Length: 298
Image 1 (tube, one colour):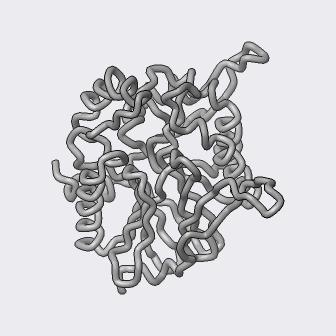
Image 2 (image 1 turned 135 degrees about the horizontal axis):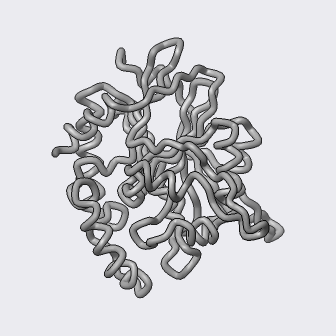
């Protein structure tokens, strides 16, 4: 099935979440949380991510993870990932307890499209300290897509990972997982890149972005995605296609914020000061711009 057909299918089936100008959202994608080993691309940014999540929690944001949160192609057992990054899941659990967490499926966690897998792996976990099973994200639903609908203007924002229609990462995702788990994971350690990944193959990345932008333009529909790992904020006159980037960049994590009816592209990084001290800083990369400027009437 083509990208156009798949995006339309997901958009029509997506759960709608009402919001208004007082709502606050932070969108991260492509964390690829792993086992904290040599092949874990998230490991070097885990402190940045933890600090950023705590900031957004304290500021009253809702966290929406736009796919590939956990690296389930390289790692067979989620429990290993949860133990390796227990501080991250502790913070995410706080969001979930307050109904401020939504999770979207990506190609690297597509096995969670099965509700029984979600129930088995995400609902509860064994607390190492107490030895008892305790709630993690009990009752959580995984979404292939979500739609934010502004209660005042009826403006809709489509949230989707962005792998839809990309053959090896969509309908043949099990084959993609096989190659990553048994080949590319091991070659990655010595610097060989996976040619099937748009995050590591420039030509494939451009192709994916073109197909998504074609759908956005044809449907006059604002869309926020991940998958390519390339942050994007449209310039004036461009189709309203946004990309949150990733949390595995060598020096930063990037994301999309919505606050006060405006959208921004941001990054968190370790910033030096004149004295040589380092601190975690939030930096605005693009925006803010009014959401209304991206409405269908434009």
